[in-house]
Length: 259
Image (tube, rainbow, N blue to C red):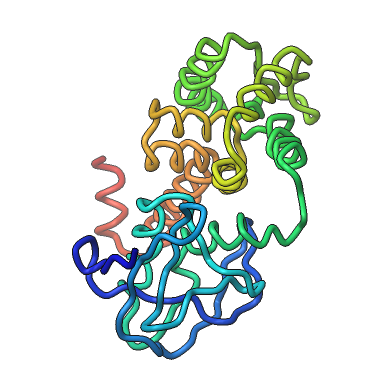
C-alpha cells in the first residue's frame, strides 16, 4: 500500500548516486542539485518500507533497493531529504548514510565481525586512559569519568578499570564476554548504529551510557572531549594572559596589580 508521507512529514526526497558511504568518522562532502519534488513511503514485499522519489524508488549507492525495517526509520530518513533545499547536502544525511551502510555492507562483514570491531575500542577506551599530571586535569578526569565508568561496571556487572599506563587497563576476559553477549542481542542494523556511535566517541563506555539513556548526547560528547576541552581552555587562558602581560599600557599593568 502506498502511503503519502504528507501525513507524517511533508515532501520527502531521494538518495542520488554517490560513493558508498561508510560508517566512520570521515565526513562526506558531495553535493548535488535537488532533482525531486514529492516523496512517499510504501510498504513492499516482506514488510520492509521503501521510499519513492516522485515515481522512482530510492536506491542505495550500491544499486540496491533502499528499504527500512520499519516505518519509523523510513520516515526519519525521508525527513532528512525533506530538509534539503536547492542543493542536496549528503553529509547532513546521517541516518541515510547508516541505512546505506547496513544495506550495502561495503566491507562485507557479518554480525560477529562488527561486534569484534566495536569491542576493540574498549581496549583503548577514552575514559580508561588517564594522565598523571597536571593535577587539575587528573581531578577533572576522576570527577567526570569515574561516575560513568562505575555506572557501566555496575549496570553490566563487569570490571573495566582505568590506567595511566600507555598500554591502558587490562580488560578481563569475562568483561569482554559479557559485552560480546550484550552486543549480540542487537540486530545487524542496530549494531551498525552502535559501532558508529562508538567510533565517534572513541568509547564503548560512553556509547553504552548514552544508548542506555544514562547520558544525554551532549553529555557523552563533552565527556569524550574532556582532555581536549581542558587543553583548549588552558591555551586560551594563556593567550589572553600573554596579551595582558605583554601590553605596554600602564593601565593594564595597574589593573593586574589591583587584581
